Picture 1 (tube, helix red, strand yellow):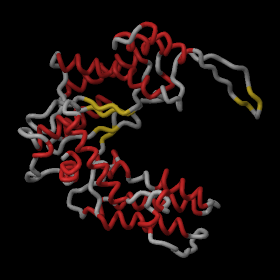
Picture 2 (tube, rainbow, N blue to C red):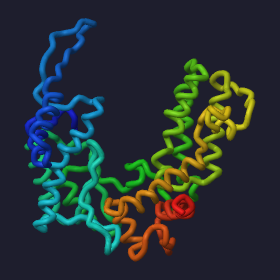
Picture 3 (cartoon, one colour):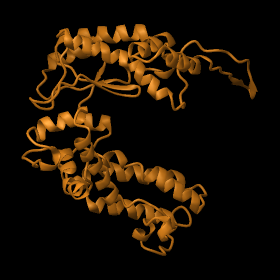
Picture 4 (cartoon, rainbow, N blue to C red):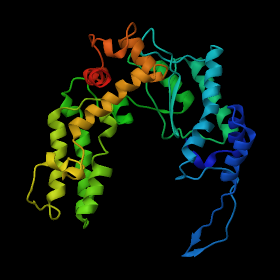
Length: 347
């Protein structure tokens, strides 16, 4: 969505909250928080007059992402209505799995459609209707469309011209995910190592104290591979390379200068109460994140991700009694590997 937060119509958001079942008193309180905002622009160092906006949500406010998701509920309702009437069809990860039509994450949205011209026209009409009501505007220049491997060139061209969206073939690169096909696991995650090195190169020239380095390592460097670690089991050698990079940055006395490593990095990963610095052990952190996904399979059986994985990999049993199976995805292999940890924790 283009300028997503700035385009939210207050009246539409209020109507959606009331339709979702929130009480009038609570909705009025939220609307007061939204509508009483004011802005001022600095021109040549001087503040101009204060003015009142008529729409939009304040970015950076911790309440704004939740309100925007409520606004996006209007799009979800249009999708569900069209699917109920048979005008749209989503996709399934397996024959017994749930049909997925769209996934929302703040102002980003992934739509799953059957590749027919008629359904593409319905999808475009839904987006237009959502735009006219909510004030949102789809940024087609930044949007990308992906086709399945068996799509014909004619249908690709016809639908792409109808929607006005560029075509891409590298879904993994677009989503920031590694491509596991035909590559060794370590090579697939090489981009994570490169991103960490680039961050260090951008900050090594600045004079950071040891306290500043601690915050930088914990909040920035060790957070870079977190998303990949929550989906994939990274090789131990790669986790060790991450820690070598962290240790080198921690002990160096200046950009390009080598410092003396006064203790092993595993001691630095101990809690501060035990004499360490509280840095993450990347291998153990990876396993903890994957075990968290398995824990969600057990405790949230009605969630979308649980229903998708259960229908495909363990339809007749629970997660703890599931089998790995043949020709499974690397995501399932990674999560399934933590099954024994959850069993020991539960029993």
